[in-house]
Image (cartoon, rainbow, N blue to C red; front, side, top):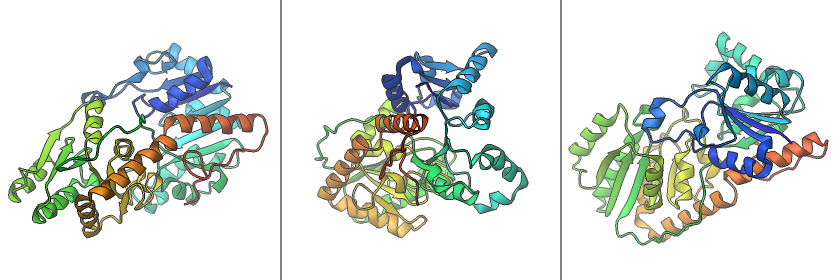
Length: 377
């Protein structure tokens, strides 16, 4: 069975899934990158794995490679397509060949987007007109993606739960920090709401909690954040560390007790949640962001608060900061859920199992939860 995964760039969030596909299929698997990795990503420490992995093809490099990419997409038994031009799969969709569309929600700005003619035409051409294809599935990346697709008539049994995958590992850490280490990671932009973390820090200091809040990232809100830190005398317990390579970010994850994820509905997924859970952090996450309600069972392997309820958020953080055993229990459960279920190995195996069943005209495997389970929410 020949499988192709085609998307824009090849970063570390795609690597675990691709490595397992290559392990299972060997030369029958190919990854296709359609655009060069932006300089903004390389400056943040992202590795372009299309230049490292032997099974990767950069369709953007020249016409010969683009033609090869098109031929692979036309002839593969199964194609997973992410953020790539629809033209690569148009032929196979018109011929009802097995295709998985990997995508986040498209109504990040609300249902009003459906009433804009340009958006409606684009959605119809790319998705809706193929909804009756028996071999066309949507890999719904984020909790709310399935809801968006149901609004344009996609059938429930064609909507499969999906996400980005981080490399997983067994925990070796000890939960014995004398200081409660808290981490917030991302771009300092309005949709990610770093100000929520600052409000939590202000409350923790008032409660005389021994803590350290680190911000990793950069962005236009940097000056505003530093002003809040200065005005509330938080310089001794809050640090803005700037951007750093992904490997170093994971080191901070591995040594943090609590990770904060405060994005609103415009965050389609939010892979920092994956990374924090792999590292055994107790995550406090916004319910509006894509990954939160997919990865977190509230109160079991993390906490989900109702954004923008700042009081509920701060109370969740305060509860964890005061309870060492709770942080440990949540962190261990978080790592377990990632190593056992939400990882690239499991995702690849399930895509292969479903593809083989469809191609052999057998019953499609049904998964209760995790990758490729029916997105019923």
